[in-house]
Length: 95
Length: 485
Image 1 (cartoon, rainbow over the protein chains, first blue to last red):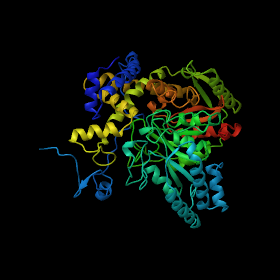
Image 2 (cartoon, each protein chain N blue to C red):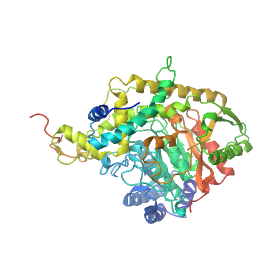
Image 3 (cartoon, rainbow over the protein chains, first blue to last red):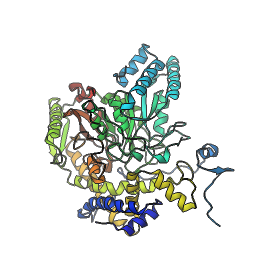
Image 4 (tube, rainbow over the protein chains, first blue to last red):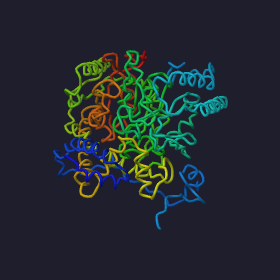
């Protein structure tokens, strides 16, 4: 199964990864090969099979709604690319 | 000292023949001197290691020593270490210093073990050759004397190479599709991927959350058991961690194997395996027969679909997990972003390497509108078929045995041009992750002077049985003690 240049450009936008024209050509080949590999799945008869999300069919545990973590804003923001007054700085979003 | 096992080092420390500070100094000196050849470490934490060694000696003097107190080891650079940078092999996290410990890290700390540093790995654990690391490829200690640089396997290639080169007696590792077992096989060391949920994933940087599992690499099965004793157990901070009693994995190492029922999956002994590799694996199975085991052929009819299912599920989960790297809260941010979209797209284009980007794009495609049912849902259904094959096999036998990898360590650069060729490296290991089962790789011979691994697969939570089977094999063979020249 092949994947078109338009598909790759669309997926790259969804994934928030900038790709240039040259990379799109390489990705066309590589992703096409990967999708060919994956296409073997279509041969499997899975009509009455339940999809498997967890090997032991475990479900998410619930815990009491209690505060268990302390506020560590300073430690967490110390490793951020840009902060000011306890806020994360990003490029201007609204003019 | 560098040739001694964890168990032996522990006894040396206990007897007072050497202090942890002296031992740590010896290991650090050797590590700094030797690792230029292998590039198996990304970060060496000399200062912290010596401080931990001093604390370990004090812990021992106070009568509070465990089997690990004062013993040097290393962490794969995927486990967060409070105050020590954790890169996951990526430019994205080149300067990331976590403000907290992974549960696995905290457990070794509590046991008094001495961490010498963080081992190299494929970027975000995506790879089978350790060539996708931003910090350079790792070289396998085996085959170096012939002048050829071979891969150590991946993604835990740094951990496996460091243990094989006797830089550390043991190192933590993770396995999403074979990332513990394949490098252990290619480097001639012993590795264990536990049952999904046995070891906490908290603070272990996520790749594919339904497949990722932390585990162990050391030279002997006994040392793997000592590692798992520290690592295994319920953790409320990991929502998929299993609350189940943890046995002492060293207690059953010496049980006799008489009556052990071994299954050989016929799908794993095909023409994808070279006759020389097959011979080594069959010889290993014969050793088990001498130890009283019985052998029969079994079938895993859907095993052939494992790679296809994996390359939907793993990239899909990776695309979701790696969306957190946005240049806002931590990690790399591109220079001079013009707007928010430019910041996201350039940060991620510049911060991730080629293989990581390929997988994010495949995963995004598989999860995108109109494709979810055909890819992700279909793969999850095939996953259940694969699991049922194993369940049927374990009705007849106790363990399954197979080669770990289709070939021994290959030359660097040989498989980097075609991602799909590289993916086939994990043809014998991937189904185990899809089923969530535990499995080991044990050194079982050589082909052309390069190590061959025997894979032993167990039923859920059968880690003690796997370690027992591996340990008994290592009492009658010396493959695991061979040292690269």
